[in-house]
Length: 342
Image (tube, rainbow, N blue to C red):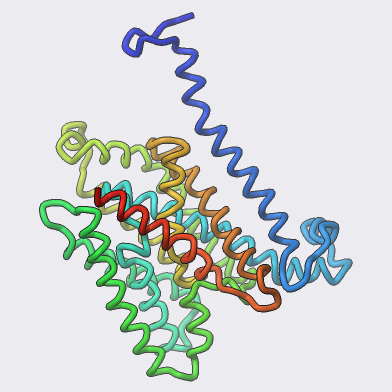
């Protein structure tokens, strides 16, 4: 058996260890598929699994299959789109800022995107739906830029980033509330959107978001090795030939775009972008191409859990998925603050 002199152990064992994270990612993918099938059976009424299978094969032979195709399937597919988008966005932001508290909802991206999206929809009701992601992206960029500007003091500490992010988010929240007061006729739909609900979503919504995710996520994964280089520190990364500022800017824009698209189609769902990368880092380590892949699957699982619990725990009353993720993520965020403050 060949021995790696530098590491003092067999190469074969190292190669096996290098494959284990991908086995775990595959296991998470399989678990997400199983949870998807289970989620399709849960709603205001329980749907037989046979009807789910019939619907997935394109048959509308029963009322249950009709419900799956028209109502359940678009929501479950959005759980995949939004879960992947928010989780990858959070992982990118944590890698770029080198801060474990960097996430779309913590550094002002989510509220900024939500404010811009609402501003477009309420003030220009005749605008094309396709413009909402662009407006949300612009708002997300402004939110992230303000937080980074005010939090930077020869670096960005986790606690300062969290505090400034809360302040900027509160400012955007005030703007959102002003819009709700100014346009009272649209308040009900707006409030449902702001809590992060997938209620009433159709396949048109899925098709609006899917192209963005299909382009942005592979682009992030292609650049994932650059996040590993940035993690070495600016001086060492520059010494290795990495254009640090340009790389940081490009990756941050990709992360903001992912989060903004998710806000545009699902509202302000919080904490998925914070929790998923943390869990993935504990499971597969810090190599970003693996970490982001694992985080994407964990994000899908969190969204499936939130949406399924929201529509099944008190049926026919529905709890928005954003409320469920907040209940899960709030205590976890406090745990991180306490841990990082030590």
